[in-house]
Image (cartoon, rainbow, N blue to C red; front, side):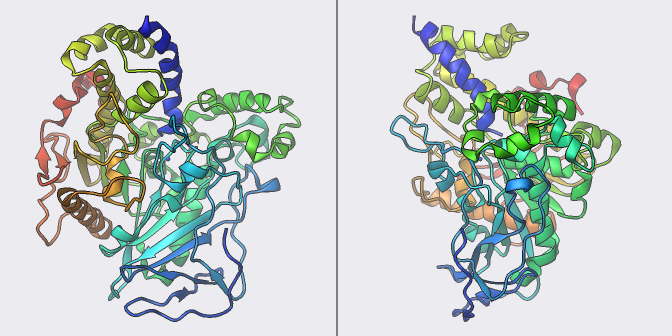
Length: 551
């Protein structure tokens, strides 16, 4: 009986997973701020005007809430980003700007957020949100430093650059930039009437345009913060990783970045979150517009621009698929798979990977906490039949509930392998034929959890590696062994951003370059970092991506 009552809720929640997958400035101050001991100058002068940052506890500097584009409000809603206005005097850059418009992710039974970032706790109704943040290292540099531009995750519907503290990576010799970009319908809505307004007769991809506007700002201004405009790494996790993958295939991103980091998000493999064709995106946009009371195609743009942001972000997460880019606009003329097939990609060295137990987080959240779980064996089988109708028998044969400690873990393993692990490996195999690739799997079975998980041990869950790269307040502190792993990982990431190769002087274990024939992936685990050749077998990639579907 329980499986019957739980199943419809679980299916609805599972469909909503896609929406989650793929996470203010003060008045100008005319007084210049002196440099603190060991710091660089706290007032710097990018092209728009001077900004005053703050000294970090470790001797570095942080500059927050810097506008990189004009507010996309009013008639600029659903238009490409415009340049930010200049200012006189010294702008205070000691506090982050607010997140882009989004619902709070306070979905836990006690009203708590499901992710640790502040944006997930507060949400936002702000459309004036195109701001970025910059961290610089604590030690003076002899020359321009490599730059990491970070795109947050959250399904392109949640999150903010200010959720990420760049201090730990900056301490390894990087200039770290975290970015806000338009989210949800405000960032990714395509509609025939919006396309008719556009010079290239296309719409959608506004969030991707914002990200490229931030990269152009970095190219023109990062030298003022000590960064090297010719050593820019674009990286992200989850939806931020998918977006990074899209920029690799975008002709308008050419020369805006020189290396890439993809963490738990693919766009080029058959099982990945591929962008929609423009026509399909426009059709879905028409349905969305109708739900907002803007069904008339002639008046749709003006009607949609009158809809308050509070209404736009209230649309049900399951009403549309993952908010992502669509093909057809100039920013993404063809799908990434086609771009790679024809060689029309930005072939940059890439560091990419996934976590060993990605889908356990979503299982704990949508099955246990929100779906009335845990799953029973019959409920697990019914859920697999609902999600894999053509292949359910084969999936259940390969992942029988009896082979796992619980049906929850069986379900989580299916999602991990099909949605994350094997697509990440497929991207590495595809890229490695043209450019250096360094593939990893994060595998700390005791990673600090984000949410309570009474029936699903979290292991190395989706986004668990972020706490090892970006200090987080909302999770339990790292153990000594985990802090050692964090030091190893930030060193790898920093060396990759500097040289395109995570290896270098020091005691970190050597990380072999990925090749499709050797298929060796670096395992990142406490006190046992080493390459493995067993990734594909562990995640049953021969089943999910047989040779007939291989790149």
